[in-house]
Amino acid sequence: MDGILISSIGSVERSWTKWAGMRGVDAAETLETAHGRRAVETIAMLRPDLDVEAELKVIEEIEVEDNEGLTVLPGVKELLAALPRDRWTVVTSATERLARIRLAAGGIQVPGHLVTAERVTRGKPLPEPFLAGAALLGVAPADCVVFEDSASGVEAGRAAGCTVVATTFSHEAESLESAHYLVTDLTGIGVESTADGIALRLTPLARRGGSIGETTH
Image (tube, helix red, strand yellow):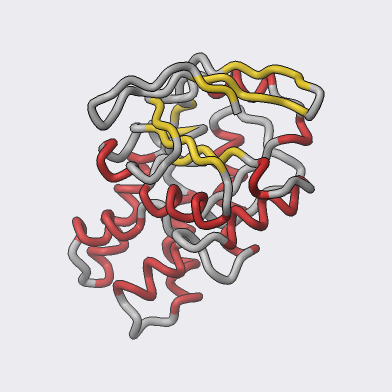
């Protein structure tokens, strides 16, 4: 969701910086840890002495109250409009309440079902979130395409056996090297109907000293 469909990075950074100050944790370390991870795991890593569930409510309330500067990222509405409604979903480290509020704030129609922090026991970089997403869609993981912007999300998608397309929105390309393809954002990604279902057409960024041509998956 965040960093692929919408950008609420300002809210995320302000909220986690506020929480870090409240709990005596280094803000820079907190932001580095939090991106792409469930809040419960971030909290457990940074302050294992605290009641994780209680802290989750604290950070959720802080984030819910801050939607300032939220924007829909380039190419998102065009791609979602071209995809059949039952062929895509959101797999996010956010809580369901926060995810629905942010998607609605961005004017994005929320899928009937989505995979959120509460619906898995082990979040990214482990594969469970994307395996749950594939099961929700009724599609084998190998036939799923994951769009991610974080290193932990890319790792999770690969571990699940999905094809991973990473955007360079929030992380340097070097940290996303394990993705199958790199793109700047979702602009220009085409959707085609095929005998087997649907195919996505994209032109990846060049990397590792060579050019990568147009690719369909």
